[in-house]
Image (cartoon, rainbow, N blue to C red; front, side):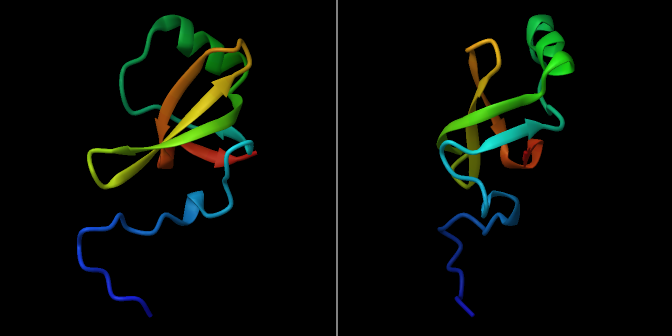
Length: 82
């Protein structure tokens, strides 16, 4: 078992099977988003992972390209593998 020092992000089981190019489904959104994005996610909550980003210094954000060609980032607990 690897000992964590506190400087690295905690392992994220939900992201273990998700890579750039993976299809994902947005399951929830924590922050307020524009009504257009709400409508898009209600009609088609699926997208493709284009990159990962560090959020708040510890978490992982996932950039997802949506069906209309726009991209947005989501927290790791807001998506699941499709």
